[in-house]
Amino acid sequence: MERLPHEKGFLVSWDQLHRDARAMSWRLDGHGPGPDGSWKAIVGITRGGLVPAAIVARELNIRVIDTISVKGYNHQTQHPPQVIKAPQADLMGDGEGILVVDDLVDSGRTVELVRSLYPRAHFATIYAKPKGKMQVDTYVTEVSQDTWIFFPWDTALQYVQPFRGTD
Image (cartoon, rainbow, N blue to C red):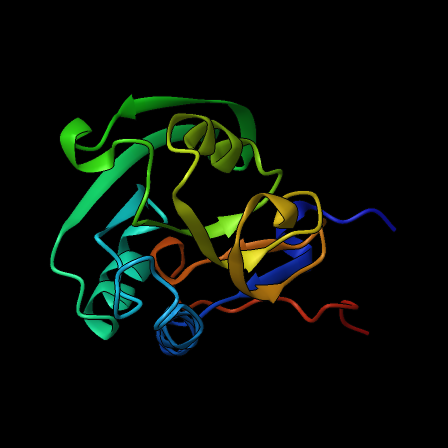
């Protein structure tokens, strides 16, 4: 039986996202290039990276936060990514000391684009799919390529049919 993308879904609650972002913070703590292992700044890839970036910034006491807006999806359809808002140029340089955060690496095309602009940045995502995981330096949880992740900002509570249907 063929399934729609949402039928092999991984529903992430706000609580789970917060726990996973904190776990990512623990992995990143002390691994920055600063003398004490600190990071110069954090850049969230919008929109999915905003919440994880805020949590990681709090946990690692990073005060300088910026964003890069990359559009690579239209609902559940992927398109070639394009930068529609860049971070502050004098902050970024080649990315040295910058922690770039996103919610998910899927195909890896978004990270590949951003890495081409900031090759010395450290890329971290909470979730990683097999095709894209080699593009990031740090991730917390791997999910299968055919899993669609439903983030808490994309969902509402409602009834769902059982996975195998009903009798």
